[in-house]
Amino acid sequence: MKKQDVLISGKAKTVYSTEDPDKLIMHFRNDTSAFDGEKIEQLDRKGMVNNRVNAFIMQKLEQAGIPTQFEKLLSDDEVLVKRLDMIPVECVVRNIAAGSIVRRLGLDDGMELNPPTFEFFLKNDALHDPMINDFHIRTFGWASDDEVARMKELTFKVNDILSKLFRDAGLLLVDYKLEFGRDKDVVTLGDEFSPDGCRLWDAKTREKLDKDRFRQGLGGVVEAYEEVARRLGVELA
Image (tube, rainbow, N blue to C red; front, side, top):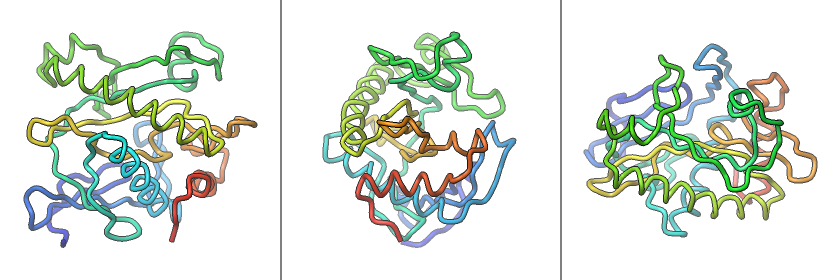
């Protein structure tokens, strides 16, 4: 399968068309960004690590019955995926208070959230991904009520699967975001699942092993990502 035209060039990935109209190639770049692209750096090996962690996670989810965009790894930093009609909504689950919810609600950082919270955000960098709700989604036609219900169902199922997977690896799944699209009429998990789009802490020390290391200038970003991969048993190049 060969790359053709650039369809999307995001903050950390580029998506290409292929000769098959139903398949795309996703390239994980070494670009690392935060604060809606205000802080950007190149981090060696980061694209490779994220690509391989994402492939590992997506295959685990597929095995557990979650429909995903993933098809197969093509190289260290490229993956073949299904073409989806993406829904412009991010689904966020929080198991532990961190990041924006701490600032918005005045919570203690690290507070256990039981049950976990669920939030929708509009995927729009120019608007800084504002929080939205089911009524916004319905009113503006971003997804049907059935699709909203299905996104929630799948997002919480992912939480059950991955919380255990990470816990068994000595990690806490603090929070994460998912994006979904339509594979014909089937709501399907798209985009990626990597340390770029979730928070992961060491279960004993609560050391951050995710992109907060970049946001907060802690250093050792790729080393932290590699540690996550090592604990999960992901083979790296």
